[in-house]
Image (cartoon, rainbow, N blue to C red; front, side, top):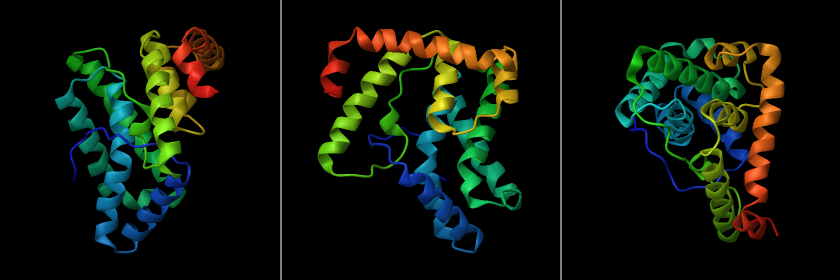
Amino acid sequence: MTSATSDDTGVGTASWEVAAREFAAWRAGDRAALDRLVRLLTPVLWHLVRAYGLDRESAEDVVQTTWMALVRNVDSVRDPQAVLRWTTTTARREAWRTARLGRRVDVAEPQTLDAALPPVGGPDSTVLAERTARTLWRHIAQLPERCQRLLRVIAFEDRPDYASLSTELGIAVGSIGPTRGRCLDKLRGLLAADPEWSDQRD
């Protein structure tokens, strides 16, 4: 397994399909496909886990635990398209459990969205995406911790598990939507006041 480290790459939606394809290949017997899947998704897991305030060593343990859980429970992921959701949900639950045990050390350092997945597009678009993502996550890091966690989950999960989020964030399921709206409003305010963000969006 590779160690959990961030990567200076961009985000491409086609990469979710790559993850599904690699998972299917691994399950069909291609051992190298697991290594490729780990390289692809570890930055995503690392990003989510660090949002829980874990130090580097604890975060690496959580990411490794997530991959070991996938190996043990490979047959439970029947749809390859679900592998991203399965791994991110498992990582978040393990990170939350670890944080609850008192192993939290630092406030999560800002991570960039370009740490998520390899880019789809040319060099120019990738550079712009990197700059935009750095600016975005720099401002997200200024939000309250609850908002940081919520927005990080939204960034990587199309259909978040609201029941799990409710437990992790300590808020009612019915309050998640309004809380998300308030967090996004705060983020929009920070971005609107940043000339660098306006320049990147022009």
